[in-house]
Length: 237
View (cartoon, helix red, strand yellow):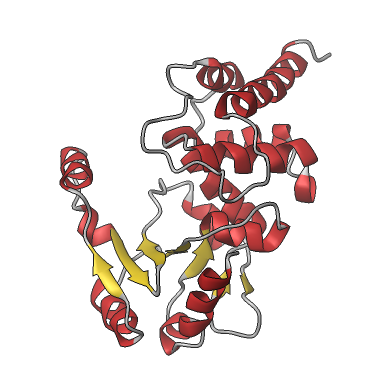
């Protein structure tokens, strides 16, 4: 992670809040801390239930500035039937974006949280989500928001089968908690350039990765990986 990101994390890491609550360090920065595949700059913390007032009090104690969601984000959440301010609070701490949020888990997906043990970030109170938990949440982001960083992260893990996380496991983990999503359906989603394309305003990975490929290059590679899984399923004995 970037030096300023590490400094921000270590500034808050011994706070009693992290010992008191089941809050876990997740996201791209947590993933990069484990596998060292790229630089990272934001801090993401997930909780099944967000004690918003405690979080705000704790972060303000360290000089953080609370940030507001855009009206576009608020309206989108409202249309989906919830108040984004109740499930996601954002701060800036010494130039670092720090988010606390409730993952949009369905009833089955909570198994990813409850039954996979966490670690600790160094010798601190911060709980580091397990690799499989981080990857499942990264999978959720991959299918839903389709950002450049998500596509890159998933590609790097699957291409190198890091911690035995193969394309087959990537698909099976998703299907375990989304039982109507067939492999054929998932391949068709990745194949669709209308769904998977670099969006306006996507911050990209140019500052985080040396000589990155284009978004479409990673999408194409992932399409081929997942299509191979589908073909193997189709023609297995």
